[in-house]
Amino acid sequence: MSAAPLLEVRDLTVRLGGPARRLEAVREASFALAEGTTLGIVGESGCGKSITMLALMGLLAPDIEISGSVRFRGEELIGKSQRELSSLRGKRMAMIFQDPMTSLNPVMTVGEQIGEAIAIHATALSRAARQARALDLLKVVAIPFPERRLRQYPHELSGGMRQRVMIAIAMANDPELLIADEPTTALDVTVQAQIMELLLQLQKERKMGLVLISHDLGVVARVANEVAIMYAGRICERGPVGTVFGRPGHPYTRGLLASLPKIDRTVESLIAIPGSLPSLAQRPSGCRFHPRCTFAQSICTRDDPALLPRGSVDVACHFADKVETS
Amino acid sequence: MSASSAPAKPRSFALPSHLTLPVLLGAAITLFWIVTALSVDLWPIYDPLDMVARRLMPPSAEHWFGTDALGRDVLTRTLHGARSSLIMSCAVIFFAVSIGSALGAIAGYAGGFIDNAIMRLVDVTLSFPPILLAMAVTAALGPGLENAAIAMIIVWWPAYARLMRGQVLAVKAREHVEAAVAGGAGHARTLIRHILPLCWGPILINATMDFGQVVLLAASLSFIGLGASPPTPEWGSMISEGAIHFYQWWICAGPGLAILSVVLGFNFLGDGLSDYLDPRRS
Image 1 (tube, chains in turn purple, blue):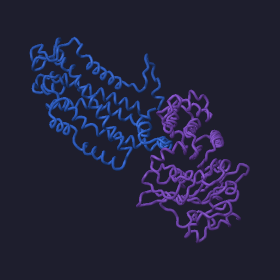
Image 2 (cartoon, helix red, strand yellow):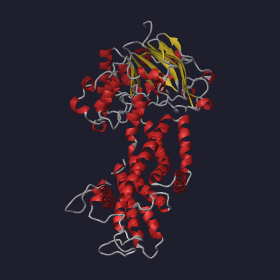
Image 3 (cartoon, helix red, strand yellow):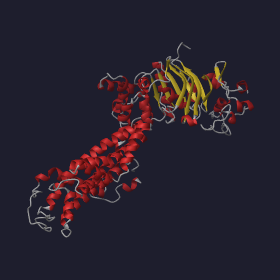
Image 4 (tube, chains in turn brown, orange):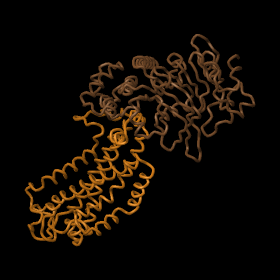
């Protein structure tokens, strides 16, 4: 890893509900992302993936308590003013949201929206220059008939096209970091593959750092260099994709992988992880996974395991050795 | 649902399904009064201030709505009354909507202390009965059409503030707003470009419906002598003058029908507009 990674998150903790309730949505999340690499963040809905990303973009409501450190090219983001963050957002770090149906302004044409994304950060550019740039961006994201699309409204486009427009908007100012929050979840399977290909191609061409939030393990395995598995607000395992998925050291990772249906094998029933994700208000004591864990011992109910290195992977489990060998 | 609005029976002409009879009627009435207000000076009718016939004449071929206590033609005065009523309504609605939606938008967007400060002011204003508040303000400023208009703006802006605030709150939570902020948009840009353009529907509907209500309240203020001063042809003051002459019903009938039709027309129109702008319409 080079001297200052593109993005370095250390002990990021997010508390909701004001000082009275202090619900920990994310606890001590740490990860780093080198330039031009991809980090996959995997976990069930509600485990804190999206909140982590919103926190590091500075997009959470001001009454939400954030602690820890987020360094973007060595520059601390936590504690920066909204004005300072605004000048970073959309320019050096961009975000793609899950649902392209609702993420575009319904009353602005595609051209206006891309043009606006450019205008926010390149104020000197003329309208004509912005529109020319918007047209180029639509070509970059491989939208057919780009000239016509510029004048269309979002409701005239299909889901895949809209996600391409979202990507074009994110690309408008050549960001160094792109956060994609489940960019393909709302799309058809065939379109999903196209959008992922597009993201990967853009990442390679522009040497962007990409954070890919997903619950699609297949996509993450294929696309990401590193992966972080989140459970109930904590990162429970983190490391190179091959190692984490090949020899999972955390029972939750194992469970996730085991619950995937395999196309080449006939199974009687799918293996599910028993139980469900604990709610934010009732996090179990000790290791948060212990009520659903087959490896759980009494220590797991008392002691929350730290994320400790095991070879190239970091695992937060008291029985990581046992999990891996079993 | 959509099948019912399809051409069920053969007709010689087909109208879009949202143009129902009441909407067309409302549009026609509204249009009639607007044209009247703009062009009444050119019409071949009497002068509204001239005493053209004997006083208190019942409706006849020369004077369709009869004459009033001073022998002036009631129909002429009613038609001329449209001008002050509609100009007044336009002004009141314009300023009430501008002030109300600006403050409401700021309250909804900013939240916290600013929201509380603005909305408590709204609550206080709305807690007075509208006619009472309008009377009090007009009485304090002195009678006259301008002061009545100011009073009505004070009465009306809070409703728009409340409406706009609710709209902004709802739109603010939408994902495209978050996406805009994630793209680096500042407060002004987020509010003006990404929130407000989606908020106007209910404001527009309410404004259309309120048009008639403003005409009504303006007439009420004039009726009790707080609006237009006597020789001016104004519906409220005409009714007030006619009210003394109980058996000469036609003096009140002209302006009364005018008020009725304006209120009805704008309500029909507003109803149609709300159906048209309703996202759930089939």
